[in-house]
Length: 441
View 1 (cartoon, one colour):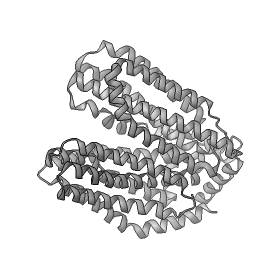
View 2 (tube, rainbow, N blue to C red):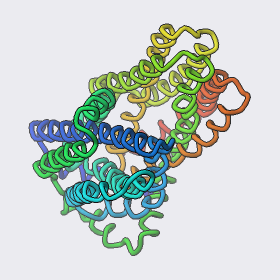
View 3 (spheres, rainbow, N blue to C red):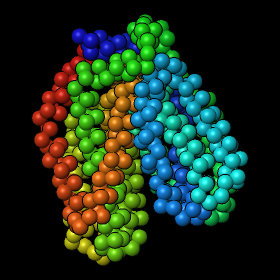
View 4 (tube, rainbow, N blue to C red):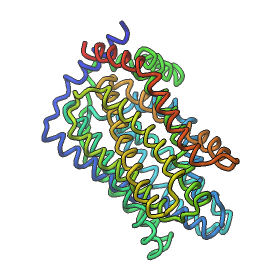
C-alpha cells in the first residue's frame, strides 16, 4: 500500500509539470553541452594532473588517486547527499556545488607552486576530495531533477544524449589532454579548467528548473524528515518495497566487481603476459568508449515502452559472453594487430551493451521513483556500484599477480557474470512484471 501511494504521488507530481517539448529540447541542448564541456575538461585535467605528478614524484599513485578517493568519498557522504538532494532546490545545489569546485580550483592554482616533489600530493589530494564531493552531488542532483528540466516523454532522450556526451568526451579527452599538456604545461592547464568550469556554470544558470512546490505529498514528506539517518532509512524502505530496484542494485554491484577483471587485467595480460606492447590497449579502450557512445545514441531512438527485460537482461548476458570471449582471445592470439582489432570489437560490443543497460536502468528510476525520493535512490545505486570497485581492484590485483593465467581469470569472470544472470533470470522477470504492474497503477 505504501508503495502504491508513493507511485501515485509520483504520477500526481508528474502531471503537474507543464513543460513543452520545445522547452524540453532547449533544456536537453544546454544540459548536453554543459555535460560535454565538463566531462571533456575534467577528463583532460585529470590526465594532465596524473602526468604532472608522475613527472614530479615518479610515484605509481599518480594515476590512482581518484580511483582510491572517489569511492571513499561516496561512502562517507552517501547519507547527507541523498537527503540534501531530496530536501533542497536542485538548481541551488548544483550552482553551489559548481561554485565550490571553481573556488577550489583557484585555491589549488595558488597553492600548488608552494609544494615540490612528493609534497605536491597534499594540495592534489585536497582538490581531488573536493572535486569528488562536487561530482557526487552534481550526479545525484541531476538524476533527481529530470522532471524539473524536461517532460516525461523527453526523459529517455535526455538520459541517452547526456551519456553520449560523456562517452564522446572520454574518447577525445586522452588525445587532446596529452597534446594540450605538452603544449601549455600543467599550470596553464589549471586556467583552462577554470574557464571550462565557468562555462558549465553559466550554462547551468541559464537552465530553467520547473519546481512543483504545490505537491502536498512532497511537502509533507520534507517536513517529516527529522534527521539524516531517518531520511536515509526512508529511502532504503522504499528500495525494499521495490524488489526490482533492490535486485538490480545488487546485480549492478556484482557485475561491476567482476568487470574489474577487464579494467585491471586487460592491460596487465597484454603487456606482462603476452608482451604485445601498448598498442592493443589503446585500441581496446577506445573500442569500449566508442561502444558506450554508440549505445547511448542507440538508446535515444529505442522506444521507452520497449521491453524493459530485453534492455536490461540481454545486455548483461552479452557483456558476460564478451568478457569470456576476450579471455579466450588472449589465450589463442598473441599478435598485437589481431589483439587490437578483435579486442576492440569485443570491447565495443561490451561498451554498447553497458550503455543500453545503464541508461535503461536510469530511465526506469527517473520515470517511476517519486521525485522526493529519487535523490536517495540514485545516491544509493551510485555509491553501491562505485564502492565495490576498490575491493574488486584489490582482489583482482592479487589474482593477476599470482601464478594464475590472466586470460583464464578474465574468461572465468565473464562466465561467472553469465551464470549469475541466468540463475536470477526467473526472479528478475518476476520482479519486472510486478514492478511494471505497480508503476502502471
